[in-house]
Picture 1: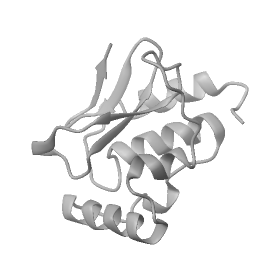
Picture 2 (picture 1 turned 90 degrees about the vertical axis):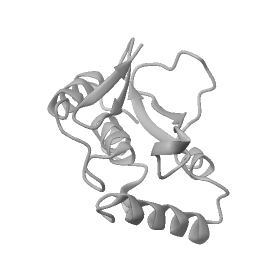
Picture 3 (picture 1 turned 30 degrees about the horizontal axis):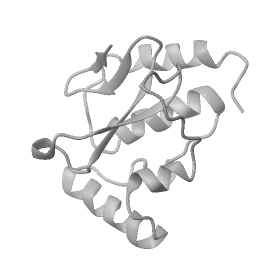
Picture 4 (picture 1 turned 180 degrees about the vertical axis):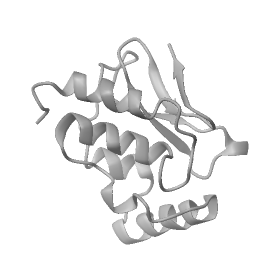
Amino acid sequence: MKFHDWDIRLANYAASVLYKPFTWGEHDCVTFANNAAIAQTGVGFADEFIGKHTSARGALVAYKRFLKVSGYKDLIEGFDDRLHRIKTNFPPRGAIIASPAKKDDSVMPWVFGVCLGRDLAFVGEDKLVYYP
């Protein structure tokens, strides 16, 4: 259940990390999306992954371990089990979103972000990156 002022909490969270650079296990895509969920509801969907790795290799190991231990075929199936999926081309504000990663520069096949109204926000190398 969302806080009554979830939208303000989400906006404040996004503003607080706007210029925070990408850091594995501290401010990567899963951490960002999980913290956005916490800002809205007080509960994360991926708390057991946060802070468990400090490199791309560590993230890959954690990802493979998650699949092996959980039995899920991929991360999307695992997160679908924890979040309510909305099938739409226009996600509502606050929605946790997944986008296929570019194969040449990603550890996992998906990157995660959050819908902040008219824009989708993802963690970039030096700051949040917004897409309409």
